[in-house]
Length: 433
Image (tube, rainbow, N blue to C red):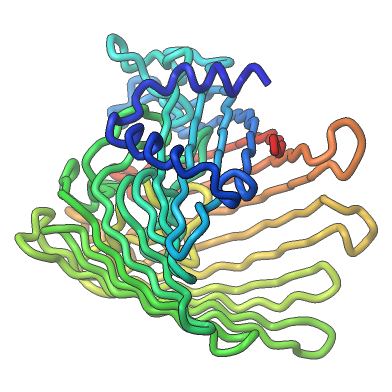
């Protein structure tokens, strides 16, 4: 257990204000729930990342021809219970440490590690980040302020590399009424996955779809999830990045037994427009997507369809994953006027007696893309495969091994690059208490 103490020595970036909250809450720690309901978990995560851009040249104006790095990450998640009484208080802490295992200047900038200040081609040997979250509970409502990992339709934190990114702000989640969940949030900063410094919220400018480095003071979100019954859930969420864009999301999740298996449906509509002073210029997008699947005896076959309507691509926050049915390992298929379809196959080997082993493969093809400065129609496709195994017993029980492979191709190389990618992730979660 040396690692957690080493990690905490790096966490000097905690704000004085947050430490004051910690001190105040400590005076109430004698209340039973604060300590008795607390938990601590440590995840050790080793990641090998290889992305080959298939252009065979290190002098390409878009950057190096390959990214190839290996790193070790540790994520310590401490969660308190709540003090006793009508209003309960608590405090959570999230500490992360990343260590370089293998990296070279020619193949760095994979997103696993931050670069050194003196040479952007060299990765740091180690980095750490820390976040505190004060929380308050009244009845079935919880208000949190501080470091957050939002997992919502209009803001899903990114955890695709070594360490996840963190957002900072306030979030209220209320479940006072049966089957109805209400959410409201105001965020003002985020810390990127390969960074230690909190920065202003900004618009993602993948493939130079929008003006890059456009920042905002805050991002507001509101949402309602209504569970109609055990097999049907309806959702409505609204979000607005100040003076840049606003979004409305409507979604339906459904499942129904059909014959020996289960039929599932996931339908999503996201409407985006520019907001306020429109610092990123015009934003006009309506993203409609649907995924239908049928699962039986360990097999699941799915088909998806996604369409971008309007003059621009779909906007989303930098450091987040867009909530699109065709968002994959490399690409999001969210370009202006793009049409895309997906075929996917999943298999759980538990059906043949091999517990813990699963496999998926999927293919997405997109066309009809409106490419700035070109009259030719843009096209792209991606194929992903993943094999995952969780050790079921013995010395290495609960160790997870995941091999992910992706191939991406496009015909508009001035903005996007062909990719062959492999990720190997070994993860182990241990409950400290």
